[in-house]
Image (tube, rainbow, N blue to C red):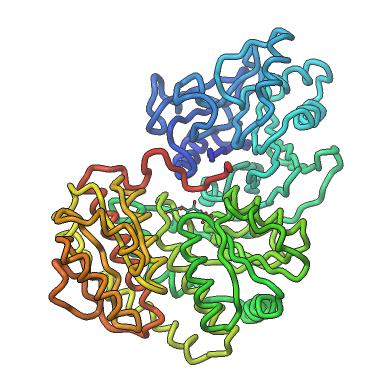
Length: 586
Ligand code: F6R
């Protein structure tokens, strides 16, 4: 779950690398480091905020280098464990994203041979293995191939060699690595964000490939050393998409972007959309899989496909997918939903399903991501880079795409047209922020929250609770409104705030009854609805819309609530503690 970037070209590498890891910070942010090469390899590292450490990283000279932002897995958050890691004499430096599973065995072997380790990380073995093989062959490519043969696990890593300052190399297995192609320069990175301001031309490395770049030549090989011809793709993201603009945080900017991003999610290739629907409708079995917020979109997809398109399907958490693997066969379609397209649990599930003969359809935001490339068909969210660690605009874009699929599969063009005016409703719900701030101020010191809803509002209750937990560190539980009385009601007292998702639809009256049951036990009720009721202590009111669309509308005030509660409690909203945006470990 770390971010890596390398540069080789005519410019000074350090500023590009430093800015690059700032853009990759969403992948991990507990420590950072960079290495450049001039006549020797020089390194700067630090813990915490990128660029802050004992000495200025911009002092580093050289036109080639590598950098890393870390989310610790093996070894604590210390300067020694921050990447880059080097070989014994500091002549080879590496940065690594992933996990080397057999690192203990390799570390023992290398230590017995006299290699001196200076960190507790799994990654450091890569530097020493490269040293071992380079000393034998004096050939970078051979050393790289021998090293990857020896390591087990997942990796995308980059290397610079003191002996050849004009080369930077990379390798990938089950972790992303892309190459930005500039004029007489290359950028090797975890994704396009850190170099999109320099070039929009990209070569996507496939799994089990290595890249060897000088400033004007890029060669890609498979793990057997055979050259692979790759094409260059032009990617669509703009530089502005990845900046905070006038907002205090990316998360807030992304919440506000939703009036346009839900529109962009509707721009889909008609033929591709129909192929997607045909595959879903023609399948013997349909399973939806995803993690976290994307799983909540998956729960709604299950509901809409079953109810609107009359396609029965199941939604399974990607981390639990193994439990149903025996039911997957050639007649199965697996629909994977993922913002990043890099979530390890999701990739593991789809790979397992593919092996059993299933067709993999995916809904992703990041074009060229591993999930996108490994799927039979993909549809894109088109919501631009999402930098805030908490998913916001990608969730509503996922919902729009799911509606579009469900209506298209059900041949309901009237509803597809209704989707086209949803942006106006989103614009009006964004105006509730002042009311949300007032509520956040009132409840920010409370430590337990509940969110309830029935039917399509239940996944939104789960999502509201997840947002509050990850942004403000307040314990929160999302529940099906009808389930409270089966146990959880015991936790409700006169200090408990309960957020009730209750717009006027066929769930309205039953949810109201459940709300009254909580009110009778003293709960403080925060209503999210298009109609007022005396049961609410506080109400976030929004206009009446087409009933089916309430989930998209009502989740936005919940995102705002989590944001403002977090601000009120002084939490780091864009970078919640212990989390990373792309969870590339299982
Ligand atoms: C929550 C959040 C996570 C992600 C989850 C899946 O705000 O961001 O729960 O939704 O890690 O990530 P993707 O969608 O990239 O597969």
